[in-house]
Length: 104
Image (cartoon, rainbow, N blue to C red):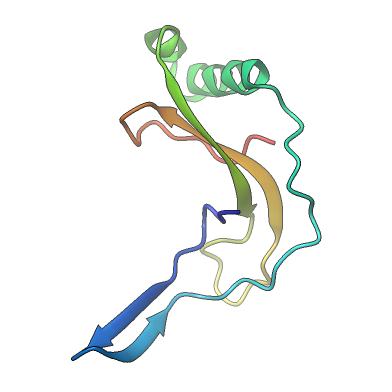
């Protein structure tokens, strides 16, 4: 499953491995079973958009892309230990913005 806040970059120079950027995950003991229904996810997503951007009505009739995976709560914090939680990434279909993580 995908870790939404984790990126690895592999760089090759003249067809030879040059370096890797990013951090490997230590894995997780969390299961891979989603607990929310699509209706619940949609309601939470629209509620968050309304709460923070006051734009929930703008997306009421929108089709969404929904992905289940993991989110690192400590992403972007230097030297912090990875803290993975189950999460949903939600965004309008054919768009990346607005996007919401985590909803779990």
